[in-house]
Length: 160
Image (cartoon, rainbow, N blue to C red; front, side, top):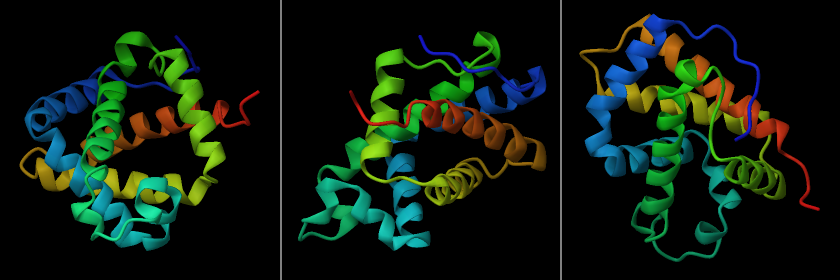
């Protein structure tokens, strides 16, 4: 497991993240796709970062590889947030974190991409659980996302 020092992620923040993820989990596939379509709506050039979208002749939302990819990213992001306080650190399998870092490095992901992704994630969650959404929930998810990104960035280097 790979670790990164954690800023204070409070019990209240954890509760907000866990509660909202519990409500969203059953729709993870649809929400993952919405999340990615939102990224591409904000930053159409981001599509070029995904090899399976670059040479595709079908509309992005119909690309057969997008939905499974989007779902796995959305689930990994949310699961990472849910366990953040309990673990006291960002925890994904170390091999996954290294792979994520190397992949993001290889495809030229920069800070602006992470910012667009954060905005899209928060908007997706806000739309998925509007009755739960609050400034505190936005802060909780934002902080959890920032912790995950910091962990990925520590691994963003060429593979040896």
